[in-house]
Amino acid sequence: MNQRENFFAMIEGKKPEFIPNIMEVYKICIGGADRADQPTIGGVDVFGVNWILTKEGEMPEPNKFMFEDIADWKDYVKFPDVDTLGIEEAAKMELAGVNRDEVIINVYSPSGLFERLAAFMGFENTLCSLVEDPDSCREFFEAFADYKIACMNRFIDAYQPDVITYLDDLATANGLFMSPKVYREVIKPAHRRIIEAVTSRGVVFCQHTCGKCGKIVEDYVEMGAKIWSSAQISNDLEAIMEKYQGQLIVEGGWDSSGPASYIGASTEEVVAETIRCARQYGKYGNFILFPTLLNENGNSLFVGDSRLGPMIGAWHQVDKL
Image 1 (tube, rainbow, N blue to C red):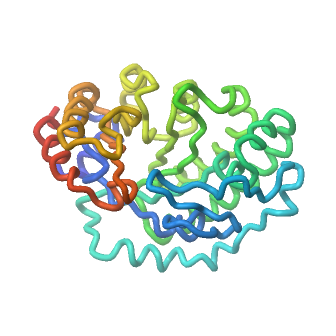
Image 2 (spheres, rainbow, N blue to C red):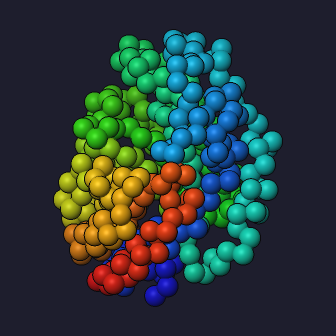
């Protein structure tokens, strides 16, 4: 099997021939999101939020809020015309020379419902709003879901992807930002519409949520997500893989808080963590390795790193099931 064939065997609940890793199974496309959601190299996005680029990643400019009362969101949030974003041009550039018969086209859609509200009004105001004014929050999430769905439909038209990865970090290393009840009552209805819009067009939906979010993984599966991405070891990954075997692929496994994720991690530490992931999680047959490897320039998967070669080499020594 090649990477593509092996991936779809997993999606169909069959036993794969080998354990994939995101460095080889995907062609990750971020150009459309760069125009529709947030700029990958920092700067002001289409909504007017200024993103600051650091070696750990991007973040909205601290303490610069668009509004502080969720009830006022309509006065400040202006949705761009999807026709003006240039998504088709981005797709043409990113897909040049890509062999679709070999790899999986995975289009990223960052700044999900919760993350976008936090980008507009800060985490503290967002978390308070979920409890103090859930009706206004629901209204915002439904409106923003409409925008996300319009963008994702344009992504599907332009890229013809196999997978769309929707990024919305709803948890810390210790637990969810909000209770499962609040998630289900305030965010989930709009989230469900996003998932249904993607899956109704025959595209695999991947839910990216970092942190300890195991309490709502069942919701992701119930709504139709086939992959849970950046799954971190603060969750009981083995129990989740066993419970949802044939239904959900767990993409992650890397100890993102441990020594192998430190900027100065040695090649030996990176290789050791790679082998641990393969041996501990690969046996379940619904696992994709997603390493968190940083250097002074940022995420190694996008900026390059001399440790990637030894990592992939070690992976191939132990990736057979």
